[in-house]
Amino acid sequence: MMASPCAELALGDVPLLQGGVLRDARLAYATHGTLNAAGDNCIVFPTYYTGNHDSNARLIGPGRALDPAQWFIVIPNLFGNGLSSSPSRAAPGQTGPDFPRITVQDNVRCQHQLLQHLGVRRVALALGWSMGALQAYQWAISHGDYVARLLPICGAARCAPHNRVFIEGVSAALRADQNFAAGRYTAPPREGLKAFGRVYAGWAYSQTFFREGLYRTLGYPDIESFLIAWEEEHLVWDANDLLAKLWTWAHADPSVEHGGDFAAAMRGITAQTIVMPGTQDLYFTLEDNRQEAALVAGAELRPIASPYGHCAGAPNRFPRETGLIEDTIRELLARPA
Image 1 (tube, helix red, strand yellow):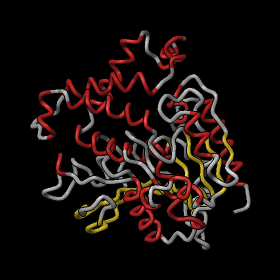
Image 2 (image 1 turned 120 degrees about the vertical axis):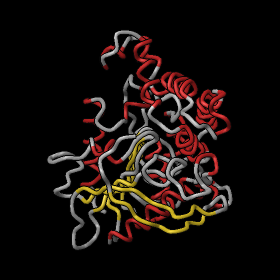
Image 3 (image 1 turned 180 degrees about the horizontal axis):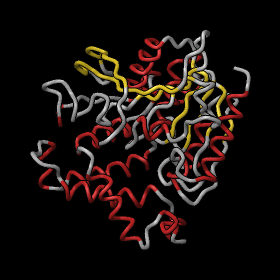
Image 4 (image 1 turned 180 degrees about the vertical axis):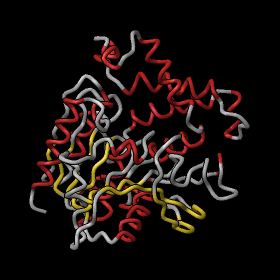
């Protein structure tokens, strides 16, 4: 996976929520802008499933809602994305299928260490799309008053049952390649990666997207061309990296540290919150978001009406949807902390 150079924080050996230790942990990250004297103009913007710091940076720029002239924007790379510690980039004995199980809580705990290292005294806004939203929610749950505002976009606080079924489906498609060899492959399991991409494509966009031929607006003349592009996009990934992040996603559940009481975990959110689900998102659904937002004091549910399904929230991918997201970021940041 290609990405521009970024900084890296050495974390040493990190104890994990599920047990065990991530040895010689490395957290890759990028920053935009300058931290102010008060240390409170920080925006934490975690990466999504197949994203990295460059992917999120598409939403950052002069005059934009995430303007580095005003805000100190920190983009931590998710464990498993090939830049931070991952099956493809781990200490001896923890590579490939021997990589330990890492939760959203583990990611956020290490990200908090990063922000402390950078001198951040308070987070003005935690936001993210998709798996980034899972992390943004966990920031607000784990760190209470440290996080002033919260904006999850086409995501959730936990992985819903139907979402888990989707994850199991794409995982099975990848593992079915005989060359996957239980994760101990000597060459990329290309057929499994291609099958993974094909299965995923049908979930990332909506029924409307396919029915109305909106793939043509993305430059694909037909569905087969679109599916081939999804195959090729996933061929660049290490298969174990993809599966490690899927495990993190599938086991996202902030109630683990609250005795299994999900409502209690959500009540720990004191941040001013706007929740932005996609109206046609097939796995982080509007109804799941509605139920979660109702558990957060003062939270507003502000759906993105879009035919682009889950991808409606992708950073800077669709102009109208991006405009709605940026307007909401500006509005939320203008509110008193």
